[in-house]
Image 1 (spheres, rainbow, N blue to C red):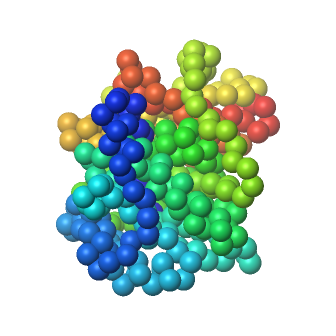
Image 2: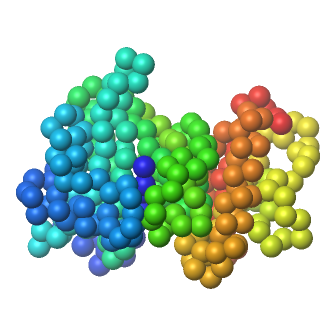
Length: 290
């Protein structure tokens, strides 16, 4: 349902700290309680969708995952929670929550938690893990699309409704649903590499505050095989500076993704442009053009 994490840093100190992180199942009452407290710290004290200790324990007993990342003192740095069930007779896993403390977000903890979760449910015979993430959060897009190699299967408007979370206030809960196929040999990670070729591709959406306020620029040239949709690099900073601008980003990206998905485009990559303070989704048409 909700994810708050980041990629890894390659600085020597971060590498040393990352090597000391232990990923394992939650065990004691104190660890389950710490998980609930981390939910509160991440999504706010009024967050209505906190998963209580009892559900964490029961899900774990029935093929779900409730696992944590611990430092050498045993402090919980992050957690992942998911449930296993049937979809049309097929065993699948839904990864409901992942959170990492802000001070641990240079250690690759989010990726390690996901990989632990993958290994646990793959041993049960699960072939695909689903979860959702906010398309406006660039760091999550990088981890999910580039590092883990997930596929975006759906854009859902206001997927979770009003959660009373400070993170969601003013932005709603529009989400990508992604599928992570974990059976067999894993495909190579999709690193963004040199985006120079991307920079000539049309950008479908206008940034809030630009002269035109529409979410999409029409029309696309006939036969447009690839296009981009832009987001800010740090939507939470945008929201602090200007809640109106953050809401504008939601509006224009929602229109752009729905517009492009209806025309047969699918997300095929993501890259950051630090100089422009933008992230760009690459979308490719299955039919070879719009």
